[in-house]
Image 1 (tube, helix red, strand yellow):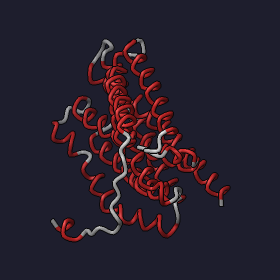
Image 2 (cartoon, one colour; image 1 turned 60 degrees about the vertical axis):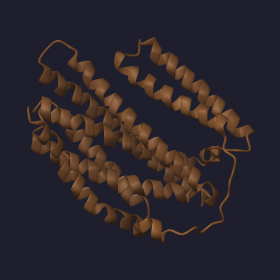
Image 3 (cartoon, rainbow, N blue to C red; image 1 turned 45 degrees about the vertical axis):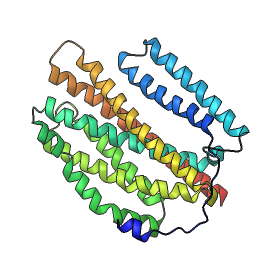
Length: 282
């Protein structure tokens, strides 16, 4: 209600025509990708997975061709010509991958391996979330005062440290340790995540800001979805082996944590490339 009463029309209204063909092509690609990628839990031998990915690739190729020819651009693909922006986007999406993937793994670990209740499994993430929420304005202040390097690289190091700790203690992580390690991870993630989007927006001219924001917002949904699917697939692969279910879950989780450690390194390298390209362009 306050927003409706306060927000005014600051620009003249425009009525651009909508590119329905491109819309249905990219929508089909997104739907098929979701349905197909979920089949990865059946293993890479599932032909439906590969067929789906091939169809998605063809639809994306068609979307790019249509976008280049059409005057009614659904998304201006010129944003991807900016290499620093691309590295910022990679970092942003992988941070979301870690965030949602971890949020899936840890409650399951606490319940299956540590034999805690579902309530404890959910609440174990709460302290870290509350702390990072309170610190979020400060992270923005650091970005404004010190620039992107400090929050981006420090945040990634925090994520890597937490992932390595999860990996090292993966077979026997107490519920308290889960809460502490997750707190380190979510603080690092928050330190870099929102600031990355702010930095990426600066890299694009004003007329491409809405396109850049749209790609980031859509991409983070898919990054989270993929993170959940990949982590679930890794753990499920171990759970299907003969043996104690709790031990197998811990072993699968340990591999998932190792994957997160590797992804943290990729994020760090992406940030370094971002800063290198920014310095070159100045």
